[in-house]
Image (cartoon, rainbow, N blue to C red; front, side, top):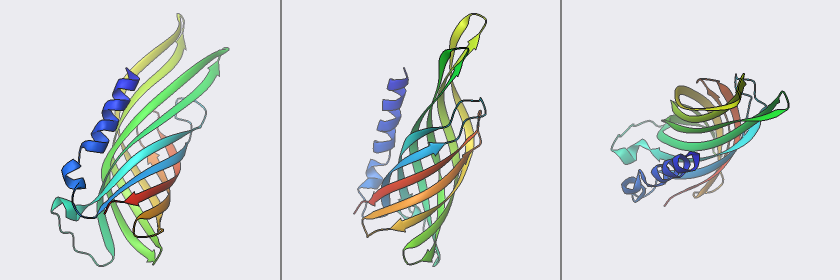
Length: 186
């Protein structure tokens, strides 16, 4: 079931804005490697991946005119797998977060942009636990809020790198610190 959900969400992420993706410029695709703190449920910290897309608001017909700031919509899909051992039994906690939100970027220097982002997180979670009858699994959809901040480094007109910090305010909240590589569509 998890694989089906992951494939479905990936497909939505890639094709949801197909008509927008055909527009000239203003769209970035990126891949992040993230360290994730242990969720409140007590699992160890882990590493995960995230695939994201940023779209300039101008591509949606929203002309936000500012000399110092850029405004973007963002959608991303991640995957995290925490584990712990309890009473000699290995337990997993898998989370597939879908982020839908917005970013505000401002230039600190010609090759450095600071951004803040805020959005809703829809997290598809599968958590194993022990009870009196043994190892159990619970799957659920959780909804939360994710604020974040980051530094974006344009490498060229086509490529960029970033470092970022996000805090996921959700059931079993956690923090992520990520390194991102991305490219801008023409």
